[in-house]
Amino acid sequence: MAADLARQLPPAEVLSLQAGDEAFMALWQPANVAEPKGLVILLPSTGESADWPRGIGPLRRSLPDHGWHTLSLSLPDSAHYIAPAEPEPQPEPEEPASEDSEPPAEPEEAGYLPEETAALPGELSGEQDDETFETAEPAKAAAGLPERIDERIAAALDHARGLQAKTIILLGQGTGAYWAARYLQQWAPDDVERLALIHPRQPDSQQEALAQLVPSLGLPTGDFYYRESDSARKQARERLNVSRRIDHPAYHQIGLTELTGEHKVRDEQLIRRVRGWLDRPTD
Image 1 (cartoon, rainbow, N blue to C red):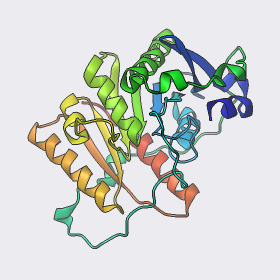
Image 2 (tube, rainbow, N blue to C red; image 1 turned 90 degrees about the vertical axis):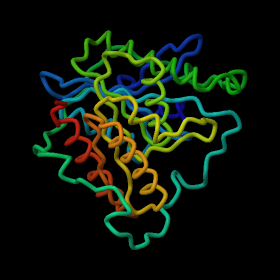
Image 3 (cartoon, rainbow, N blue to C red; image 1 turned 45 degrees about the vertical axis):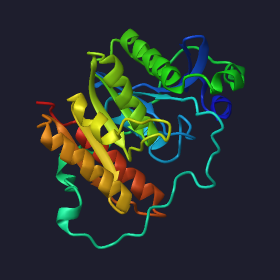
């Protein structure tokens, strides 16, 4: 997928970053404003590309119009991973539930959203050879997956620091949300100011529960989940309960509507909610 994207996208968007002894692709979009608010590093889920059409791709292209640089990473897949027939599992049938059985949707957490501004051309010098990303990784696939992902996040953070980004935010989707939280727990970089989770999922290979991992960070956190799925609601409730027990200072949970089939409307909803959370004061 990385090689295909490198061929299809403008060269100015494609970066080659170095993580340990392997190069990997990241997609760059500069903020379309004179004074950028900061940089959002995006981590896709298992089997997803750095420009995945659901969530990651729309966010990486839209946030620059609202003041944010975006850097979307390609992550190594676990060994023997087989992509599902559908990009993402369909939500489970919705069942009536009382207000006590699910976390508050808190749509007001998104805050006031300014009108969208027109996109301006991005600028970045240098071209990437798409062959950089065509080398298969069979020898690396069975190596320590968490360590390899940590190295890629570290490389992205180094790139952000080199740009002197005013604010650095990690945003993970699906299992990417778990890896972002795990990195923050393991390394505790003091210049990452916020964590955003989009429909977070725990990788099968990891034992530490996401519900325990995320709230314990104490970092301003936006937890976006889809309310139609029974399992997503249950897991969101667990994360919310843990955050309350430890009196988390800035944990916000935002319920989203699946809107099956309405791809454009669904993407716009996610972008509005994420933008609103990004614009919230952290105090």
